Image (cartoon, rainbow, N blue to C red; front, side, top):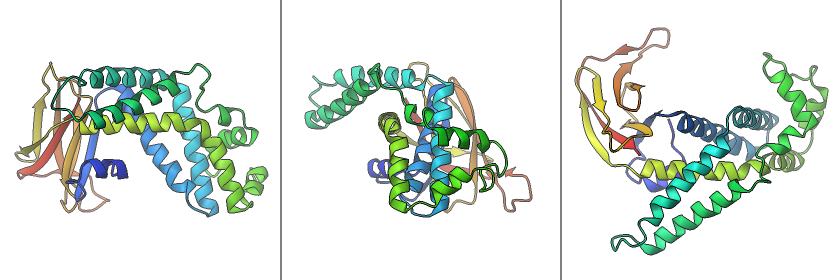
Length: 268
């Protein structure tokens, strides 16, 4: 589920919606995971307690590990390049607001330029830091970052809120271009789709994706008060949705046996 401020600002009619998403390809899946981790980092960065700083450090390490395993920077540059060409094709369209279009193009081109810079290596600050390296080694062990295991970390966490925030911002500094690019790409992707009203008979819905309009992200919108949730599965040609309910967490979720009305976005 996602409910970022940017998203709510663009979809003014979904503030009372629960949104469930399924990425169709691997790079969008990685973008969504990074968006999730950056939200954790940003939220915990603003808070003052030791446990918030721990959460922020863990989030930064997870971000760094994810971008180290895959060439997300390259995928982001390709996606930004595709959007730039798409928005440039709108420049001679009389139905397009030139001011809004120019603002979006400037954001895309700035982000593209920042990420394309050969000297930009996201996560470099974290890779070069000895304290982060010691925390990363212990992070995979249950309780591995407790005080007796990492006295240097315990000492750092005892520092003032201002000192910890300064250090956290330093570690996150060279990740901000990637964070901003992912946010921009996902905002455009989510807003670039029509919303249709659909019905799932006996809690089941199946949809074939048009070949000339391939989707990258499937979104199911429900009321926040609905007592069920969707399980979405599928690929680039078709997908299915089963609406499930789980009245007790000790029981397995089960498919409901009534018609469910919902809203669908196939984002391309």
